Image (cartoon, rainbow, N blue to C red; front, side, top):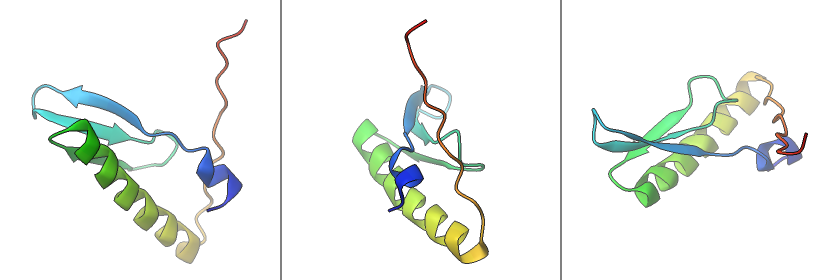
Length: 73
């Protein structure tokens, strides 16, 4: 895994309407996964991420750099 890929963070939230956890990586267009539990959603996201990165490499799609967020002023 390349350096900028290591910094990708999965964001997890509850979708009340669907009664599922949604896993999202905002930097990756079209990326999301879901699951009935947090663990399942994260597991599914890791699978989707590996597939997303593989396709991006094959197609020459650049992997976005992660914007570092600071909580310091």
